[in-house]
Image 1 (cartoon, rainbow, N blue to C red):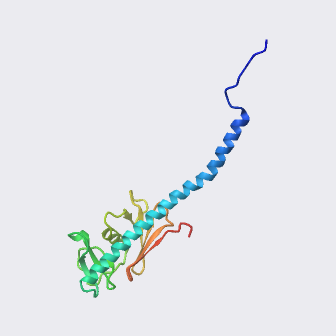
Image 2: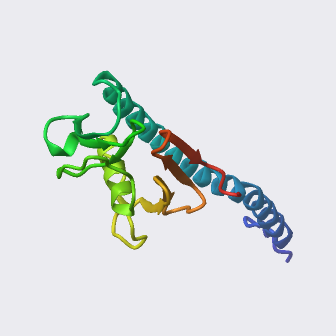
Length: 177
């Protein structure tokens, strides 16, 4: 007596075809997701660079409104108290944030770079001079004379450059350069 059997499963060929199609989709989709992460990092560095640049410009305008001539020590730029004070260099741009009097403040070390970063931005990303600092998003370096570069720790080909001689802030957002 013949048996009537019906198959409710997939054949081996059907399974192989489905696996091949999924592999092709993965090959196409994975690079898109990698680029999304890189695009997000670039956008974050650009936004932080714009905020930093805006703070530098605001400090320069405040300096100009107070007479705009020569260096100024402890100029109240933000809020009240020493946290909102900046020492402005001879060119009219932020050089540091330290309460002691200085007749001609200059941006001349990594601590100065970090103090400017923290003062010109409201709630800035955490900056450090050590890439292994917990919660740090940017790594500050001093470039002689009067210049700083802040590297984005997660992707160190991205950075923000500041020159206190002319107030320029340049965001390097090309991870392939």
